[in-house]
Image (cartoon, rainbow, N blue to C red; front, side, top):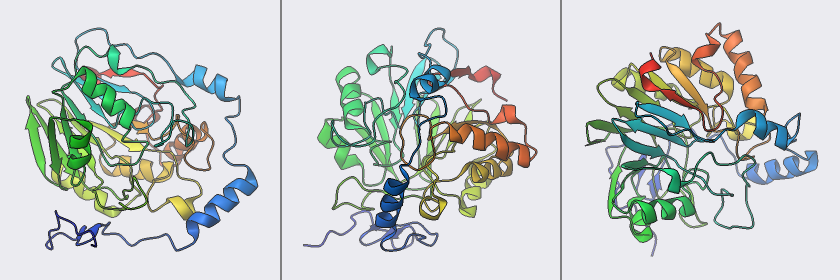
Length: 332
């Protein structure tokens, strides 16, 4: 029997009876995946960082410092973010395993170490997930979370609640774009992203993808998740801004003919950063896994060039080290 979307809402353009879709046109054509893989293999891409992987890790990684009690934000590498708000901890897209893959012996391997382990956390109140790709939703990390924090609240896009229930999660809320929920004085909005979902050969776009906003009395944070550039993203700032903190992707963009419908390049991220008022912005989606053709050390260089070309303050959108934190009372 053909699968039908149980969350289908005909009034919403990103819904279809068979699953979910982007409102923007699809840029990929049949055969593009095979073409990219062939070209990538022929050219030996991606190349290692200029100084090698060990030197790259020494330059860009440090162990996460959880000391103190101040409200803070940490970048944990790739798209993983941690927040401490009034003593409560939250994670966004935590992936702390050695591979972004369903297999332990195959698939994109971590090139830089995780800055912490789940056992290091003193508490965990909530976890946000943007979509089900393996570099954003990691089974081993989720299982480690559930072993240590069985009552943690998972907040996920439409269609992902069943997966978490199968993992043993007790508290799961799933949201559509523009829907919200609250927990302990924090408001979470699921917001649009231009991407897709797939975890097996048979579930393409059967669950939704999204970004998140996290809002308190003093923080308004937009985490874009994985997203290609779209003018539609500006609606997020118009409806839920202004933001004083953002996390925008700057990696996995090459080659652009293949990646642009699902991943922003640094120039597009800088344009979006500028359009939403240039809040303090964490560059994400780089530095850990080689998912596209650019080298691991290319995104920071391309970001610096894009900021200079746009005459933007580089201190507002600078590359963080994996494990680095900033106290939120210093965010303006």
